[in-house]
Length: 259
Image 1 (cartoon, one colour):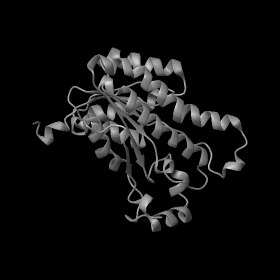
Image 2 (image 1 turned 90 degrees about the vertical axis):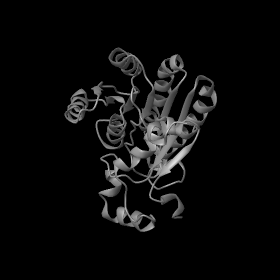
Image 3 (image 1 turned 180 degrees about the horizontal axis):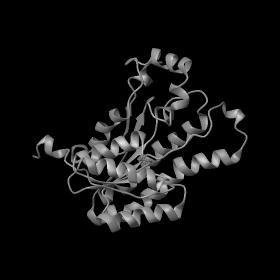
Image 4 (image 1 turned 30 degrees about the horizontal axis):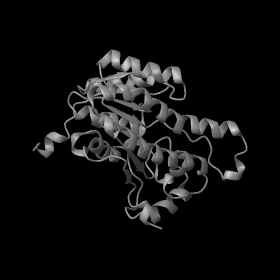
């Protein structure tokens, strides 16, 4: 039986992490690289990707930067092709890139373009990118898809209705990937972070009134940090999580039990 410390070893694995020039994506990419993986840093801005790659290289970590607007199918195909060109394989896909351009009640969103944009980035892109990566998983009869959802996918909040709907769709996408792709040796799981201190969630934590209200209801009494998502992602990416598929895993400081 493999020793547990060896199971978390990602040596020889190649991981694509979307939206990884900052926040949760960057933290996960760094965690993977520290465990031996070669990582692809990806976001819409090539300069932002290159800055992270340089930072990682200074620490002796293996990474390349490939700009990709995940809502663009040409970009998605190029991301996969360039990853194969750089590393020759793909073992892990973390669908982390997401948007939420609106923070208001559902009835106040009357622009269909906003709905379409959220669904294109948060739902369509993870589905399409995973489909593009699947043939490379099949070559090795092994692969791990990690879809970053949100606690908002599990319980309704206020002002985040469309975002919540998109993330709820990600949970079912993960389950269907797990059910349909298990025969290819592919696992798919979803991580639901709670309130994490990132630029993405700034509208919540920069509002002291909202932050104070949330923190009073969280058993841990505080918001989380991006680095606190890394352990769970490493588990799901590694052999330690080899029997975990189709699951939804929260890292929310107890937010979901506070009600």
